[in-house]
Length: 130
Image (tube, rainbow, N blue to C red; front, side, top):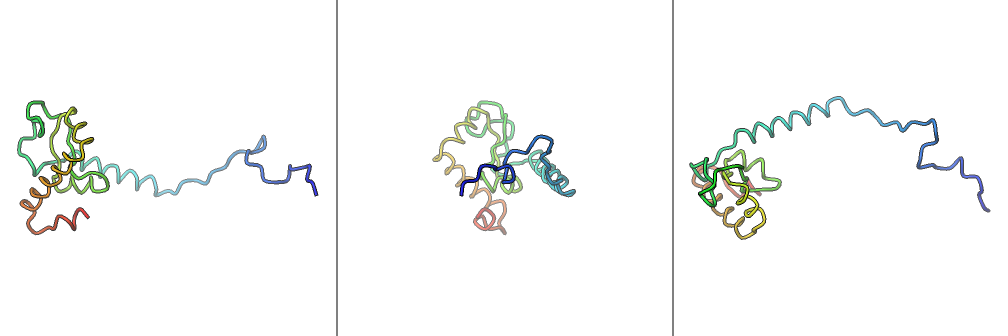
């Protein structure tokens, strides 16, 4: 059996005159995103470092002025890193170097773990940063 008329079958492109109707977004979803964004903005605004006291100078090269904050523990633990002060002041040039150099990242992780264990004696580093 050969079907010649496909007008009644599924049509991925809407026919002229039909509008592609999407379901309205849930009313609370925008508020959740906004709260999460403001929470993250507050965390980023109030960053501090337990690794170094000199927050005006780049932690790596010591000569350039600080332009960025670098979260030593990155990825899914970035916000936790900000919360516990495991960030360093860093210039843009050094920031690119640290981001791309795995051995330097591992050294920074060890330094941050020692600083964490010294500053937060009652907390367990491995439990906080799984």
